[in-house]
Length: 303
Picture (cartoon, rainbow, N blue to C red):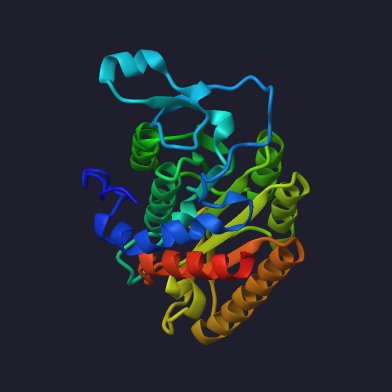
């Protein structure tokens, strides 16, 4: 992995990336080139887009040497095209109103998800995989198409920093829309609290699998959303709709915990059925610790 990036990127933590560096090479061996960049695309004869120059190394087809660059720099470089990347990845980041929540954690769910998205983008970009970013609430709000290279990383970081909290979400409908939009077989990474009707959102997730995409879901929750430590709360306001619910505190807590447990089981079961990687993370867990553990486990299960 290259040297740590400039710290002026809000969501790139050089110390966190340094902790992940030993996983980057190991993860390159994973099935279908996850974090790979180790083999050329099998597609031949297609119209391709020039991506960047890479320094020539022994074993690379010399027909791709750019002799004009050699004349200027007195060093051999080859042209790399988008079709040569081993993988295309789309990171889908939920920016709906519920993602703005935090209790005792230092980060909102959106901020935590942005750190995850930035770290993944960094790893992919510097391993010459193409990575793109889509933000959404009840519809797609921004879209950066997958590209390669450090220059594209700057575009992704700027988009993350420009992202603001949105409206209520419609996960099922949005996932169906995006599954039809992403044409080429890709890795789709979804970062969301998944707060929507379980059957509808699972249906949307399965649509990605129907289109032959590999799907990873990072369900990002605040710890208070899992254990509901509010014994004296009698009034709850929905962050997305503004609707208020009044109830006896103890009865409400018991009902809530039962509801969230059933919801998580439904989501987890639907993902398992569709062979989707579903991973729950809490915003009080260091994102680099979480991501490092996930990468190591994914590597072991896919080799």
